[in-house]
Figure 1 (cartoon, rainbow, N blue to C red):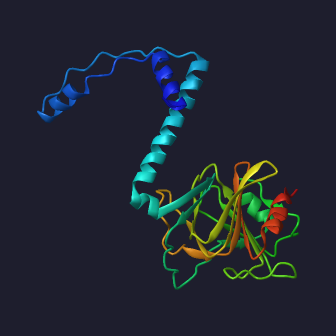
Figure 2: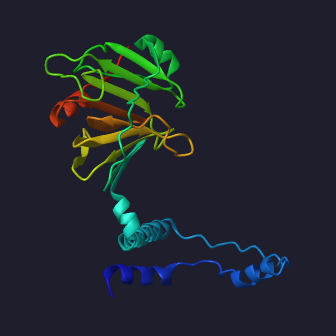
Figure 3: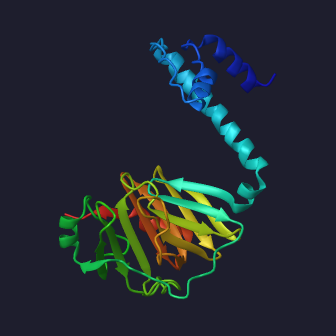
Length: 265
């Protein structure tokens, strides 16, 4: 018996739960068009806090193992998504085959404005990377709820123009706590995807071969016309915000820019 089997067996002896309802009778009655007699409500006995935490942890382990088994056993699922990474506000999927790049690459950043005006429209305090100074262009788009801020910086020495935007650096910010998977990335097998911690905050670095960037609607569907190629990207959770950096920079420069994020008075 494995350690996991032993723990689950022990957990089964310790858990106290109400009797399992007679599902077979209920289903059979419904199939015959007869409403079954309602069962008496059972009040479950509560576990002590320590036992409950232990039960939840063990149940989660079992669920993850089951999910991993299903994933490994289903060739269609395994071939479609090779790796999956997530942050609050964004998902990154490594797939075996990338979609065909759209003929028109759309870059809709919203309305051009100023930092002062953006602050009045957004449901969060804008963050500006002091490493780059004041942005050359400021944009706000709505939706999403709470707004999305984009700070664009012209190319300059040390910040070459990205292949996928007219800028040297494009910084985007939105409320990841409101939109857990608003933006997505699709990357091929040759793209480098690395989980990071930047000053204790979770981040993902995406570099190398081409990958796609897209938005999702509230139902989780890819927004038509929003799929576009992206260059190197750093995704960072900053409190309730998801901050996205895109440019032709390397990993260390991207991290330095992210570390310099600061609110402006």
